[in-house]
Image (cartoon, rainbow, N blue to C red; front, side, top):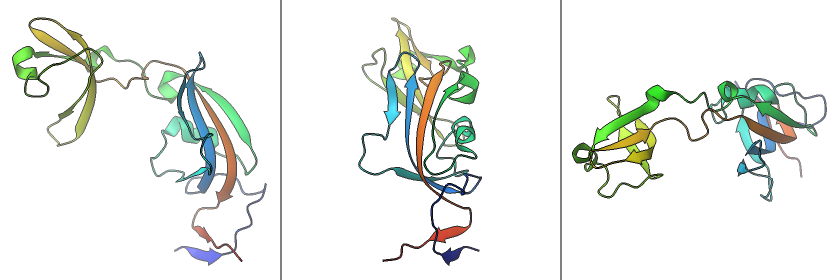
Length: 165
């Protein structure tokens, strides 16, 4: 049950599973290429720890941080987008592939549906006269990333903050 009370965001409230967190974040490659960032937005984003809006490795970095904290963490592939897996490369005949895209091009993103009706995104990685190769690995699979965060507010699990005017 959620209780309504005034929440005073302070340095003592630490991020835990179920916390509502207001933060800015940035994901970049080690060479400085920014993949995603909220630092250029006017307001920080909000998320609930454990709601699967962040990968577990990213959430682990946030645990126990407090309002006012900043952190930059180096994440290896298994902590971020996974290792690149050669078994995630699939080959389709050009005829079979024509059902998905008429003019396939290397780098084109395509979506397939699995038996469970889940969408599987893939990237065309090679094309020849007979077949099309699709890579179903995440585009950042196998890469180390940097995860930078600045925490603005932490609301404890099960509590709704009410702003007093």
